[in-house]
Image (cartoon, rainbow, N blue to C red; front, side, top):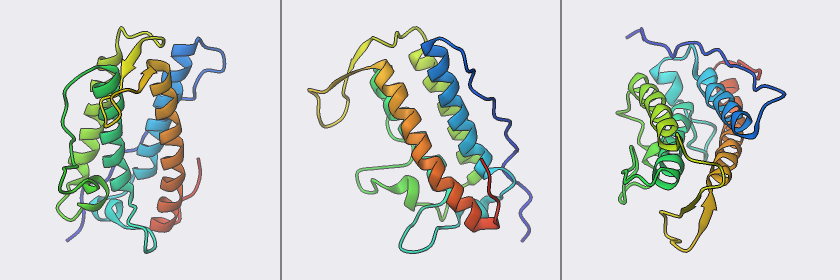
Length: 177
């Protein structure tokens, strides 16, 4: 069976070199979001599910699914105060975003990621960087500001985009930014 769907190309926009703090944070975050999608561009379902070298179970699709969860957790649950459930993970399968790929639909998962990014943008619309939010996790005593969430998300993407670089090179030899 030949795959007909492939992840679409992505045009990344460079973050402006002179910008206010909020614009800079949002621009860098968008750049990293687009970088992850660019690492998936041109690959079909099966290639996106390919795992790294054992014992690692990382895959490009797993990274997209994971970042969907991370976006939801930090922006919607924390910054937005929304009661949301995880998209892929459960108490029984806490790493399903990475691990449960056999029946996954890469096209649907990439679209879920895009929708989640839009939902997270809406969740922080009107929030100030200095707004303090409470942890929604196991440490209810922890407080952070919205700025911290943006910075954490940029760091999270940067780390996982490094993984994506290696995964893409392993899948088809493609390297680059």
